[in-house]
Length: 309
Ligand SMILES: *Cc1c(COP(=O)(O)O)cnc(C)c1O
Image 1 (cartoon, helix red, strand yellow):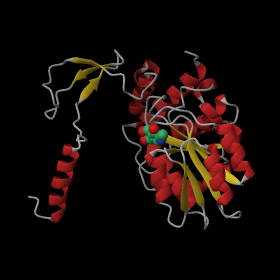
Image 2 (cartoon, rainbow, N blue to C red):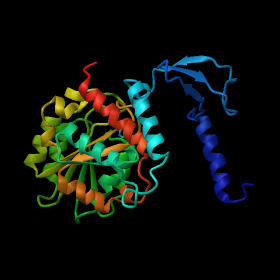
Image 3 (tube, rainbow, N blue to C red):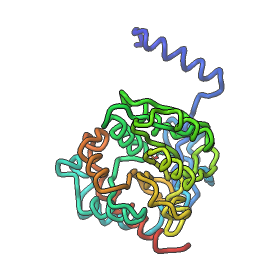
């Protein structure tokens, strides 16, 4: 095995990674649904330590609220599997759209005060597919991207052939304004940023960013992945907390962190969502989220919206 030059490349690259102390080892841990956040050391043969059933308390998970083990959420998934089976059975265009998908999209649009919402198989895919689709729509797009934007947004921006990307310094509105002012007046512009940044947990000034967007005729794309479920009334995020959700063109989020389940989404105007539904490759050419996942996410979102605890 390993005659092709690629395999030699892999070996030396992995050696470098090890030398730099960046080599990753996974420790399989079995989450205990009835004892959040307790996990048990798994029995996987690749486990670093012996599978001794040792208990581990995990504070690094991003199911921040434990919604993934909430009984109502778990029961919703089980009921949906019994009724509809384990998989979606198709892409959204071909047999994969259930009433549950439609209900969750309407729920998320309502959560953010937008006309429409669109589900994706993950938050990563929602960012990558939506940004790529928007930035390849018309010629000459310029995307203004915060330096600490998540890899999924960067993937979408880089994947948009023909669009250019201007990186502004992290949370630096003066730098953003200077770069907006220097760009051609009539080029279509989009500002892509986050509300709660995933690496440092700092929060952006959404109102001021939207004010700059208005001044320079730019659209705004906001990743609220680390905010939804946690900030603002009904867990609707920082834009809603700050009373400026209506000023943001596109609000993106995940169902896998604060909401504890799985999947990603964008919300915005009915026209924009209709366009993404029709052209975004990462939306069209993949099997829809399973009904059980959608039912669990719907139960989670509804519970978070209703319950102040
Ligand atoms: C985790 C994360 C995503 C991706 O969401 P998933 O649903 O886990 O794919 C997108 N953006 C940010 C800022 C994130 O931290």
